[in-house]
Image (cartoon, rainbow, N blue to C red; front, top):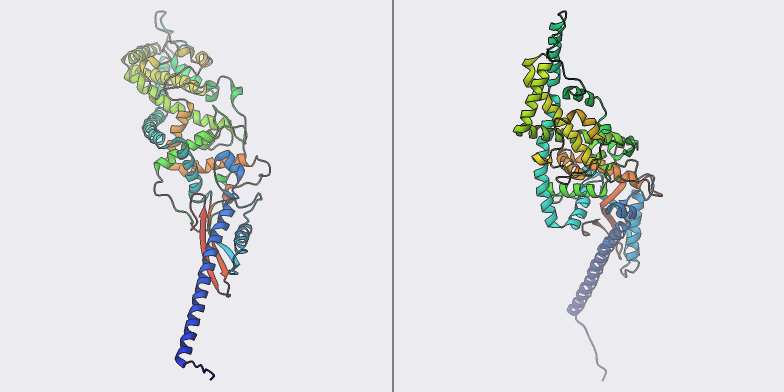
Length: 486
């Protein structure tokens, strides 16, 4: 007898539903797998893109940036998106889900020069932190704060001393006396005659002030670099490319410590008078960062003038605090005023003697710094160089060999404090540092058009993808040199 089979309508409906559910589940898994592969592919593509960082920039300055111009003179955003697409397609070639890239575009990117050079500064600070360690950083921060406050006060004091009109008032009193003497008989033979100009510290000050300051503190002018640069082409002087959006935020721990770390980076990577850079258009790069002039000589002159102000403020205060030196200055002031016939100007003459003495000592201090010696911010009595009797011979003393000081800060130490005092102008300082980096990089073969405002530190890309069943979706991923793919 032949068996008969049958199926109910309920069972058919159940099987249909189950088949649909299995198919839907398969499609869901397929879509999820495609999206996961696409996300991983996007991360890999961005990682590969930023793996093309500029090797020369890393070798010279320990900085990671992607040259968005790829050696050219203009940003090539199309090439960047092509590189991301290419990297993505390489990953998707092995994708069994048959996913493809429809289009790719940059929704944000950060350049080295954006936000006052924030990414440049952050990378420089990170390199210093890794090099020095946390303990050294804390020690530097404490020392820099103390020294900078002292230098700030001394520089302000030096500026006030320069603004004083003591010499003009002394000249006015002397002129009034000479006018009163006009038409009278010659002085009696026993009357005190004025001190000769070559022994009068006030007249010496007049003479020295008219001389070039670099010629005084650098006896051999042949040691000064004569390099000049076309600063109009520098990054800080031109209109810069701007990044798109803001793909990076300011670190939570950014602040004074980061700025100090950045400045330590500048001290280690930039040339100065003591250790010139041989590669760029300017050898005294630190002096340029502080002064911003177009020649080594002018930048050095500006820095020397600031050092003289600092030393004048310190030395003037030291003389006033020393009873012996004050007594010597008072005696000579009385002698000068009496010899000039203006006894009422004794106090003024004493002040001028102290100013001359402080200036002469300051010239010797700066001469020693430039010669490789050390000078303490505040001197003790035993560290004083110039006696009042030797003040008339200051020009001869300046021609002697310097650099004998062994206590206090060296030239680079003073530069460190001057950099620290530039906190309120940090954007200018950072841009000038980037001027020097860019200038040196342009001397590298094949990099004549290198521009830091074309160098990417991070980017965010949006990709439109086509899935295995023709569906489209968008994917946004970002990557940078000290962040993870997102």
